[in-house]
Length: 150
Image (cartoon, rainbow, N blue to C red; front, top):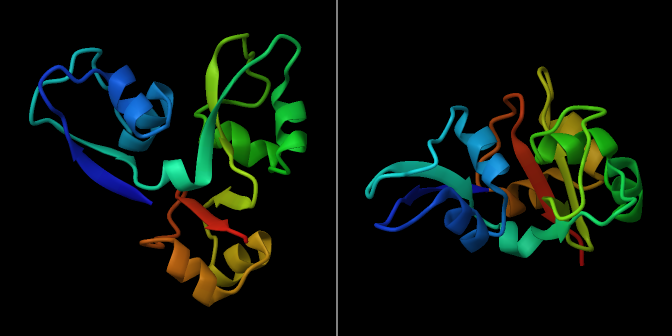
């Protein structure tokens, strides 16, 4: 679900996030280090591989809460805040952008000790579909796994 992207001359964290339909915060989170505001050409970073298929960017509206957004999108609240690099209870503000699953997308973020069997049960799918729709399954903490239901 991720790929390595080689930074081009003139790229910024924001332009890369927009290109891969994600957020700068998500790119920072999946790279596990602070990315400087200015990237150099030929730097290699990890970006979501299929965000365009499974997720969309949502602009926070006045009165929105992460609980409400999770409920509206049939998402697990804890996974939704983790997907967006947030902590429980963190404030959100109008015009901020977050990733939300597209209709039919079911996702989870793995936790320490997860097994394939547990992930399959939590996603309500089978192992074959899980493997077909996810490039690699490491089951390390914080791996994003998702499936698209027709």
